[in-house]
Amino acid sequence: MIETSFTPLASLLGGAVIGAAAVMLMAFEGRIAGISGILSRLLPPAPERPAAGRVAFVAGLIAAPIVTFAFTGAWPVPQIASGLPVLIVAGLLVGFGSVWGNGCTSGHGICGLSRFSLRSAIAVAVFMTTAIATVFVVRHIL
Amino acid sequence: MSILIQFAAGLVFGIGLIVAGMSDPAKVLNFLDLGAIPSGGWDASLLFVMAGGVAVTTLGYRFVLAWPRPLLAERFSLPAAGRPDARLLTGAALFGIGWGLAGFCPGPALVATLTGGMPALVFLAAMLAGMTLARWRASAKAPLPMQERGRA
Image 1 (cartoon, rainbow over the protein chains, first blue to last red):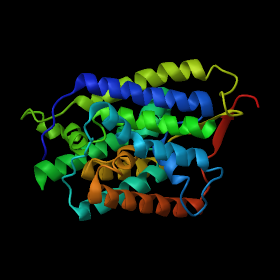
Image 2: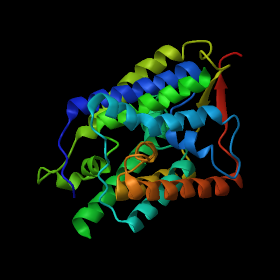
Image 3: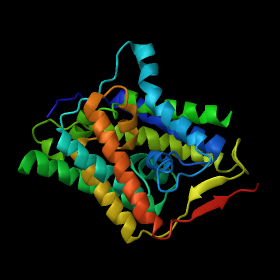
């Protein structure tokens, strides 16, 4: 495993910025900032129209490192320890599961909990449990 | 205007993920590793991301959803407040396993497009394939209805 340091203040601030983006999308567009929903509705078999706004949101996410680089001079490189087979299996599960369960960490975790949605609260409890169990098995049992 | 706003929302969201440290799978996996609490290797930071995100969104939604309609759309489009069903549980369970395997969820995977090199692109491609597969399977069943609020 790669060691990381405890960053409560930066994480609290970052979380608040994520919340600000979610509120912004609701205020202007009346929509949930659920990334799996926004992204997957661009995909086959029936991409939903109009797509331009959702493409723009995705482009904004992809461009975000450029902005933080401009301010901090540091390129935010993700530390990925997993091998390609694990990344492929994980990607398939994250993609399939988030569409099948109608949401991911953003849609259920941030937006759903903030609307006191029972479905989202249950989804968060389930995915937190299976994620914690998976890390436990991989790191402490296998 | 609407497209510019949505680009800005994505940009702000991504900046939040980076500032929070959530765009780094190592940090996510160390947060999910409750088994590392005894050894001191647990990174509790992501609890603070959740706290900051939910606090701002709860207050912001309370304010905004009292409006008759959003600024640039005819109505609020909110997911229906249905009962939890088997599909929700299965999807969330599979999502969690994938998240626990690599430490990536959809937002951070998109943020890593330019920064994560080949491994991040492989994850992203697999994720898009998984989403497509789920949409194909779901299109055979009834889609979840959207609840619409507000006047046009």
